[in-house]
Image (cartoon, rainbow, N blue to C red; front, side, top):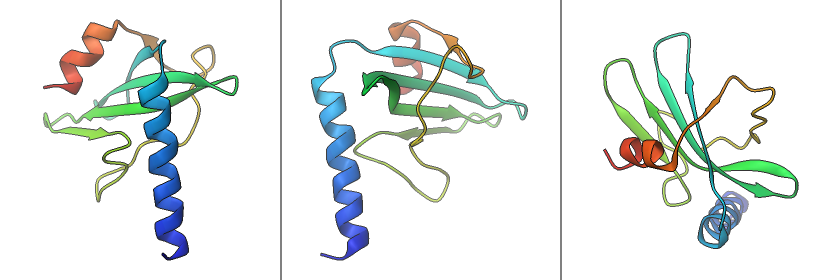
Length: 104
């Protein structure tokens, strides 16, 4: 196994474990300056909110989803930055609103 394969496998295992063990999930929404809509599902990990699912709805209506099963592609990737709702330009949304977008 190469170093890149090992790193990717470790990232997948980390996000999968968070997703499968989380009992409390937090959901957020953000509109960017280009008209894109971003949706995040995050869980507490080591005192921070770690994003485990992320969806981007582009102004053209394309939906891009990232989670432990699909960490990245040519269009984007699951963020590796913690969310800080008190500082980041995100709004809290319901789990149902997040799911409507995620399962679209």
